[in-house]
Length: 390
Ligand SMILES: [Zn+2]
Image (tube, rainbow, N blue to C red; front, side, top):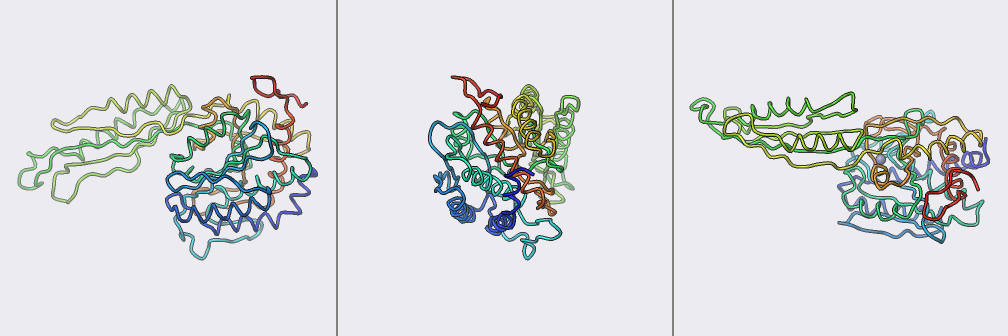
């Protein structure tokens, strides 16, 4: 066991208590008052562990927190978010439970666990190093809805950095996420003409039938071999059971492994034309996050494997994920990005969301070692840091 792991092991009860504090704070993305309270809780927690107060950047009442640790130019960004997908009070009495080493609660995995692990990793490092020069810890408030208000801040904080570590949950067995698909969202609006379904249906233009054509058309845009999924999701048409529908709408979820595919599907969706005579179609939406290609994380992952091996930690594994994160944004800027460094567990965004308590010390130690390794990396002028230890 590494020194960091042993110390994190001793701190485990405190870490679980901090995860409980964050989970109980509850912070759904669409509830700005809850987010403000959650930001207060995080600010106090960070003051205790990091010894400093974050800058609070509010955009459209969403509070994002930035700790710029140490002095000097920014070199490493730790990226997290404190919003969750869970509506306030939705877990009721079950909001917090620890049983048989399994932690359960809304947002415990995504991503209170990752935030707490990062704070303790930084604290453990600060106890052994003089400074954390160049480390920025950013906790945003709207990742779960695609970061509309945090995107600019994320890009600004990441720009000067040579690496980004993302505290999203690891894979089911703690795998790091070295590849993520890009995502796009669309709404296809169709318009027909209402008519009485019994008296004169022939005078109507059925938006439901029109919509059905588009569901099938959109479905054919998927390309399994290229890793492209195009999924018609929520759809609706019509107003009453005896009226020819005048309006319909279809939501489409698109995931692609490459930018070229993201663009291909975007073009095809924009070129949709009506099938039924007299119907109209309008498409709204577009790409929300670019893909995180494997090249963005390859060097950092290889380095992490060596760091883990040298420290005697369990061998690291990598997986690709169909879900997006803010790591997609930083990778798209060309900044090496390693994702999935947060907590280990399962059931993110689902009723069974949980964190495996026994994995917390090892993950915290891994993160501390990776941060130390980055800070020790040589920095050739105007280039990326060398992967060789200095
Ligand atoms: Zn997340």
